[in-house]
Length: 127
Image 1: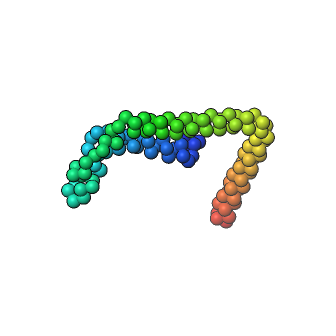
Image 2: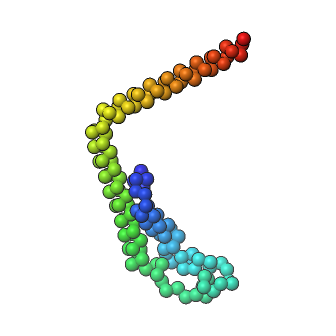
Image 3: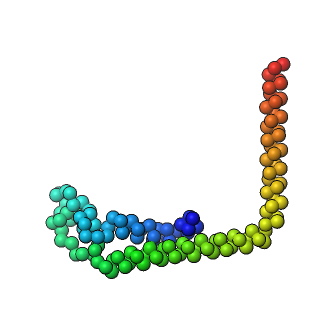
């Protein structure tokens, strides 16, 4: 629910950092060379020396900070939305209750009209 309320940059930042942790952080083969299994492009295999960015502790801290900032912003937006919605319901609750009762009445009238139309077509078909 927190990420549904926080459309935009908190969602993008958090999941970019999470996917970066999953796929591009560490000392295994894939983060160091994305196409390590092929031999045609030396840029993407072990012929290209690695500078060690993907397993650096500063990189891990930057990713952790990105996750923290994204989650914090989304939680702030969630709590603010809950607070403001609670105030709106408290202020407009009685009017909303009357409006919902009218909408239910309109729905019941529509169902009654549909039932009458169906029964009328059945009786007209029998004649």
